[in-house]
Length: 438
Image 1 (cartoon, rainbow, N blue to C red):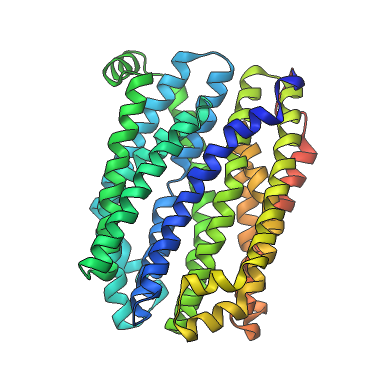
Image 2: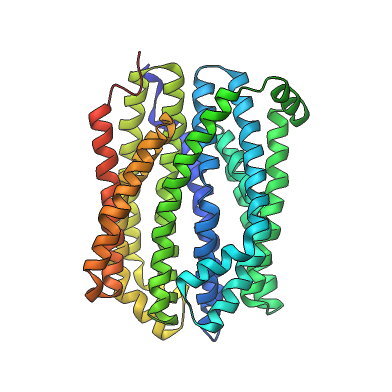
């Protein structure tokens, strides 16, 4: 069974997800670059702040993608078509309800987050406007998570790539139209994203319908409601929600601390966080391949398949991290120049840039092991390790490094990602043969 996992097969799953994932931060980089070349940094800072808030809000529901991938991959490995059909329908219902709830509570939610961050009055107004507009796309974003999770679970990763290309192509074109041509600034960036998200929703549902006719899927699932399966999905998603919310709290916290140091620091951190997202989404390509292959091995109950997956996907993840570090180091000057020509912002990006060079190598272990445990459906371990890293490492170290100001903030982020990898690695080492039994 181990021979069934080849490097070629891993790459066939990973490369579409790497390109798909990288299209997300690429879009953010283009938004940042367009706004970063306007005369005032306030629009860049407002979108950075609003984007951080939306990352916190939307990716708190990233469990919809991860949970769907885990359940579908395991059912796919066990050749249980009915089970993964039910998982898709139940996840779609949860996604739709989640999107509607976000629309209903968006006003107090946004105001509460902005109160926590406490930006200046101008930034408060611009960021709130941007975020309110973007939240209109909540139902589309939630359902798109499930669509992506389904196609990852059945190992058809080129479909999410195509959807991502369409979404981001529309978004980039509308960014130029709304920001540069129509001079709508941060508001234009928000509307561009909303229109693109709903375009992606229509395309994604079309592709799902080609595989699982939606009317037939709904009828079958309604007639064969499995309350045990639904309860399991809710339990796993609850753990993944806590895990993801904790992760995104860290990035929101960084935005908050940057805002307290002024618009220029906030804008500089925004650029570095956008570059960090390139690292995150790039490494996630192999993590996604790991999820679906590990889930497949869990469905097959094959320990050999499982360890072959872990070894070979980790090999490529490490190489990817090393290449990213090398590229960031070699292209430092042009990257900073491309991102902004505001001298004060560029100077601060230069000062803190070296922290970015450490992140790929330190973070790769956390991303890779996330993929392993998501594939296994061991969501409680992911939750506990994330909370330990947040409460036991990130926050205490940030407090102790307050005299270092923004350097202390980035040091805390490095240590946080390292702690995630160490705790997850320890759990895998302690429980290695418990997860998948022959």
